[in-house]
Structure formats: structure tokens, C-alpha cells
Amino acid sequence: MKNLGTFQITKAFPLVATLLLLTQTSMAQTVNRKILTEEVKAEFRHAWNGYKQYCWGHDDLKPLSKTCRDWYGTPVLMTAVDSLDSLYLLGFKKEADATREYIAKNLNFDKDISVQNFEITIRILGGLLSAYQITNDKRLLDLADDLGTRLLPVFDSPTGLPYKYVNLKTGKTREPISNPAETGTLIIEFGTLSKLTGKPVYYEKAKRALVETYKRRSPIGLVGTNINVETGKWTNTDSHVSAEIDSYYEYLLKCSLLFGDKECQTMWEDSITKVHTHLADEGENMSRKNVTGPVVIGDLWYGHADMNTGRRTATTTGALDAFFPGVLALDGDLNRARALQDSMFKMWQAHGIEPEVYNYKSGKVVHGGYPLRPEIMESTYILYQKTKDPKYLAMGETMWRDFVKHCRTEIAYAGLKNVETKEKTDYMHSFLFAETFKYFYLLFAPEKTLDLNKVVFNTEAHPIRKTWKN
Ligand code: DMJ
Image 1 (cartoon, rainbow, N blue to C red):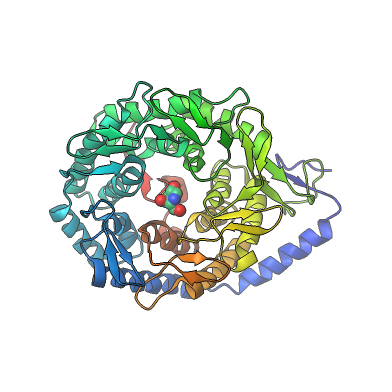
Image 2: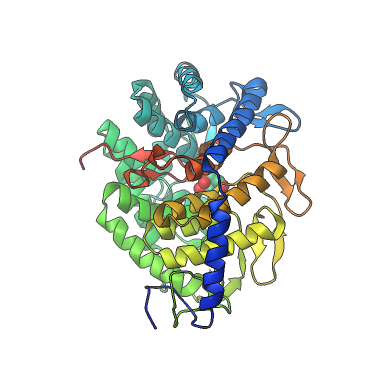
């Protein structure tokens, strides 16, 4: 019995495992990356043209009614900013330059609107910083600096944990009930802003929020779903790696990768151990004891448990949870990453597209929406980069074909109301351009397109490069 590390498979399955690998490899040999790369570009262009034709100057396109949505009644150019670095990456330089010009001339944060700090940070602050690093256009950094200053009042709570909303003009904050994803997914953007402007305040405030979240972990090392930023007390003790917690874990790791922050590394290492101990759910094909080769078969899922007792509260996962194999792979835990990715792909294949919430024990869809989420493509891309196993290209191709088949509309792309009926919903999130198309593209595009070792993606897939010394 050979130990391959943290995750293992039973001896009873070597033949099955080999056959599985051979099937996947031969499937993968037929993947034509060049054609797929061109297809992704063409579909990106199709959706972008739809957005431009109907909603240029507005935040988002509603692709069925061909109308527009501005998140706060007045535009903050959500889709334009979120898409900018993707436009450059996919090679649409002329379009990207024109969009950049439009943003530089029209984006203005001096508005009497109360915005959600998390969403504005990951989509707009992250988008501006990434595009600045690509273009060196100082106007983008100035916009980011102005936005960062206007967001800073969120941290003025008794605990240093950020309020959910802040008024960009008055600095008035609201909504003290937050969650680890919103209190702990800020350090990549605010930290980068500090490094690029030389103003330490951004890093310090976001880092404190991350640490204050971690400090409130339970005695068994888990965090809950909701926390009051004024009292520092948990208002919902359900623990998981899904909505409202997910990217807190992602940023503990990425903070250490991008900034070399040792405290972040320690917090990540401690937290991930507790997640494996209390949240992992291993199916009957999975064993921690026996191992025969590099192929992991069987089930690994991460469910819900009470943060204080570790008692299992739900056996649900979903589209958002699919970021987790990618994070594990980034951390070098390839055995767990591979096993979990296989599980997530099973969830996708159950209906030819993944649901928002899925019960992995019963195989039932709990919430059937699919708002064009990118997490499973992100993990597929990272796993392919880390393993070069062609099975991930084949996986990506299957998902790409399903995605186009079910989500394409006459003028753009639409999320699904229900993955079982495939009925569409009248919305196209900006993360379609920022993330979903980008990860598909990066999976299939030539290896030299982007070196994963040289960038850290924020949770909205905006690549950040460490261009500073320390
Ligand atoms: C994105 O805005 C980000 O990836 C965030 O971390 C989670 N939700 C969406 C995509 O699903």
C-alpha cells in the first residue's frame, strides 16, 4: 500500500480506475483546443455585442426582454468594468481600448447611492486594478483609489468587521448583519490598492477584517454563516464552504500567495484542516486508508455542519461550492481537489448543467437556478494547469457544449430559472464576461496565454500580478 498523500483510494478499484483514466484520456485526445478557443471567443463576442447594442452605459443586460438593469438606479458600469481585462485577455484590443476610454471618461463614484461593499470591491475595484496592471492607464488607478476611499467607512464598526453597505457620497453605512464572505473577501483588492498607491490604510483595514472574522471561529475551528459586525456575535451558526462563506477561505489562501503574508498562511492552514475534519463527507467508494495510484475514484463532498458542535446539518452543495477544488489545487492538495472535482462534475452531469443547490446524498435538486456561474470552470482550469491531465479538457468541452446549448439566446446569454426544465431567466450577470467565458477560454487557449504561477485571481477572476517588492 503506497501513500500518495492526504487522499487515497481503495485497492479494490485499480482496474476500474485504470479503465476510467483510459476512457477519459481517449475522450480528451479528441478535444480540439484551437477550435474551442475560437468558439469561446465567438460566443464572448456574441454576448458582448448584445450587451453593447441594448445596454451600453448601463450595468447589466436583461437578455430576454432586451432591457437593462442598473444596480443602484444609476449606472456604475458594472459589465463594462467587470469585462475589461477579459477583453484584453481574449485579444479584443480595439474593443478593450474603446471600453477603457469610455470608463475613464464616464465612471464617476461621486453618487448618493448605498452600495454593497463586497460586490463593488470584487467586481469594480478588482476590475479597475487588474485593467490598470494590464494597460498602465493611470486613470484606472485613480478611479480605484477614489472608490477605495469612498468604501473605507464600511470598516468603522466597533469590531473592525465591515458593514455590508456604504453610501459613496456621504459614507453612511448600513446593515450590520454580514457573513464571512463579505467580511473576508477584501484583502486582494484593498491590499493591491495599498501596494499600488503606497497607502497602507487599505491593506490594514481589510486585513483586520479578515483576522477579526478568523478570531471568531468556534472552538472546533469553524465559522458560521452570519455575523453581527457591531457585536461580533454569530447570528447563524451553520458552517459550510458555500454561499456567504466560500471566498473567505479562498482569500485566506490567496492573501498568503499574493502578499506572502505569514499570518494569512497560518490562518489558512489552521482553517482548512478544520474544514476537512468537520465538513468533508466521504461517500462509500472513498477511503482514507488504501491507495493504488494517482486516480481518485469515489465520492468526496463538503456539506454543512454546526460550527460549534460539528453536527451535520445538511448534505447539500451547489454551483458556488464548485470553487473549492480549484482552491485545494492551488494549495497543492491535488488528491482532494481531483476527487471533489469529479463529484462536482457528477452534479453538473445529473442535468447537463449545475443547480444552485444540490443534495449530494439524495441526488435531488434543492434550488434549480443557474445564473451563469463560473466556479466549476474555474476549478477545471486550475486543475488542468496543475495536473495537465487531459481529462479536464474533456470535462471542459462537455460543460462548454452544455453551457452554449442551454444558455445562449438570440442576442446574448441568459441564466436558467431551472436546470431541470432549462427554462431561461431574464438576466445576464457581469461575471459571465469577467469569469465564465474567461475560465473557459483559459482552459482551452495556448499554454503561454497566462502563467498561473505569476498571477492571483481575485474571486471575480480579475488577475492580479505582484508588481511590488513587499
Ligand atoms: C462572483 O461574483 C464571484 O465569483 C463570487 O465570489 C461568487 N459569486 C459570483 C459568481 O458565481
